[in-house]
Image (cartoon, rainbow, N blue to C red; front, side):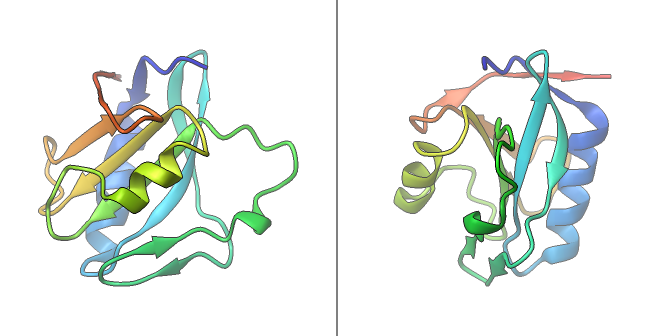
Length: 123
Protein backbone atom coordinates (compact mmCIF):
# COMPACT_ATOMS: atom_id res chain seq x y z
CA UNK A 1 0.00 0.00 0.00
CA UNK A 2 1.29 3.45 -0.91
CA UNK A 3 1.37 5.71 2.16
CA UNK A 4 0.64 9.37 1.49
CA UNK A 5 -0.12 10.72 4.95
CA UNK A 6 -0.32 10.34 8.70
CA UNK A 7 -3.18 11.22 11.00
CA UNK A 8 -2.18 14.23 13.14
CA UNK A 9 -3.47 12.56 16.33
CA UNK A 10 -1.30 9.51 15.63
CA UNK A 11 1.77 11.69 15.13
CA UNK A 12 1.02 13.47 18.42
CA UNK A 13 0.71 10.08 20.14
CA UNK A 14 4.01 8.87 18.65
CA UNK A 15 5.82 11.97 19.89
CA UNK A 16 4.32 11.50 23.38
CA UNK A 17 5.24 7.80 23.55
CA UNK A 18 8.78 8.58 22.38
CA UNK A 19 9.16 11.34 24.98
CA UNK A 20 7.72 9.13 27.74
CA UNK A 21 10.11 6.30 26.80
CA UNK A 22 13.20 8.55 26.82
CA UNK A 23 16.08 7.73 27.25
CA UNK A 24 15.03 4.29 25.97
CA UNK A 25 13.92 3.69 22.39
CA UNK A 26 10.40 2.57 21.63
CA UNK A 27 9.14 0.68 18.61
CA UNK A 28 5.69 -0.14 17.34
CA UNK A 29 3.80 -1.29 14.28
CA UNK A 30 1.76 1.13 12.17
CA UNK A 31 -1.42 0.38 10.27
CA UNK A 32 -3.06 2.46 7.58
CA UNK A 33 -6.40 2.98 5.92
CA UNK A 34 -6.66 4.37 2.38
CA UNK A 35 -2.97 5.30 2.41
CA UNK A 36 -3.10 7.22 5.71
CA UNK A 37 -1.20 5.94 8.74
CA UNK A 38 -3.82 5.84 11.48
CA UNK A 39 -2.94 3.42 14.27
CA UNK A 40 -0.04 2.35 16.48
CA UNK A 41 0.20 -1.18 17.85
CA UNK A 42 2.63 -1.98 20.64
CA UNK A 43 3.48 -5.66 20.37
CA UNK A 44 3.78 -7.73 23.59
CA UNK A 45 7.31 -8.91 24.29
CA UNK A 46 8.96 -5.93 22.59
CA UNK A 47 12.39 -5.19 24.06
CA UNK A 48 13.69 -1.65 24.45
CA UNK A 49 17.02 -0.16 25.44
CA UNK A 50 18.99 3.06 25.29
CA UNK A 51 20.43 2.26 21.88
CA UNK A 52 17.96 -0.15 20.28
CA UNK A 53 14.49 -1.65 20.32
CA UNK A 54 13.44 -5.07 19.07
CA UNK A 55 9.95 -6.20 18.13
CA UNK A 56 8.72 -9.62 19.15
CA UNK A 57 7.54 -10.37 15.62
CA UNK A 58 6.27 -13.80 16.61
CA UNK A 59 3.65 -11.97 18.69
CA UNK A 60 2.18 -10.06 15.71
CA UNK A 61 -1.29 -11.50 15.01
CA UNK A 62 -1.58 -13.69 11.90
CA UNK A 63 -2.93 -11.73 8.94
CA UNK A 64 -2.12 -8.41 10.59
CA UNK A 65 -1.67 -5.77 7.90
CA UNK A 66 1.61 -3.99 8.70
CA UNK A 67 1.88 -0.65 6.90
CA UNK A 68 5.20 0.13 8.55
CA UNK A 69 6.78 0.98 11.86
CA UNK A 70 7.59 3.85 14.16
CA UNK A 71 10.48 4.04 16.55
CA UNK A 72 12.37 6.67 18.47
CA UNK A 73 15.95 7.81 18.37
CA UNK A 74 16.65 9.35 21.80
CA UNK A 75 19.91 10.77 20.40
CA UNK A 76 17.85 12.95 18.03
CA UNK A 77 19.34 11.55 14.82
CA UNK A 78 16.64 11.39 12.14
CA UNK A 79 18.44 8.93 9.89
CA UNK A 80 18.07 5.15 9.87
CA UNK A 81 20.88 2.92 11.08
CA UNK A 82 21.92 -0.14 9.10
CA UNK A 83 19.76 -2.26 11.44
CA UNK A 84 16.81 0.09 10.80
CA UNK A 85 17.23 -0.24 7.03
CA UNK A 86 17.29 -4.03 7.28
CA UNK A 87 14.08 -4.00 9.33
CA UNK A 88 12.42 -1.48 6.98
CA UNK A 89 13.11 -3.72 4.00
CA UNK A 90 11.15 -6.60 5.55
CA UNK A 91 8.06 -5.05 7.13
CA UNK A 92 5.77 -2.50 5.52
CA UNK A 93 6.30 0.41 3.19
CA UNK A 94 6.54 3.46 5.49
CA UNK A 95 8.69 3.80 8.58
CA UNK A 96 8.93 6.73 10.98
CA UNK A 97 11.78 7.84 13.18
CA UNK A 98 10.86 10.24 15.98
CA UNK A 99 13.86 12.03 17.47
CA UNK A 100 14.57 13.86 20.69
CA UNK A 101 13.42 16.45 21.79
CA UNK A 102 10.19 15.10 20.22
CA UNK A 103 8.82 18.41 18.96
CA UNK A 104 6.49 18.78 15.95
CA UNK A 105 9.34 18.78 13.44
CA UNK A 106 11.47 16.05 15.07
CA UNK A 107 10.37 13.14 12.87
CA UNK A 108 10.97 11.78 9.41
CA UNK A 109 9.35 9.13 7.23
CA UNK A 110 11.28 6.56 5.17
CA UNK A 111 10.49 4.05 2.44
CA UNK A 112 11.19 0.33 2.79
CA UNK A 113 14.55 1.10 1.12
CA UNK A 114 15.45 3.68 3.77
CA UNK A 115 14.97 6.69 1.50
CA UNK A 116 13.30 9.83 2.85
CA UNK A 117 9.57 9.83 2.13
CA UNK A 118 7.44 12.96 2.15
CA UNK A 119 4.01 12.36 3.71
CA UNK A 120 1.29 14.81 4.66
CA UNK A 121 0.04 15.35 8.19
CA UNK A 122 -3.77 15.01 8.03
CA UNK A 123 -6.17 16.67 10.46
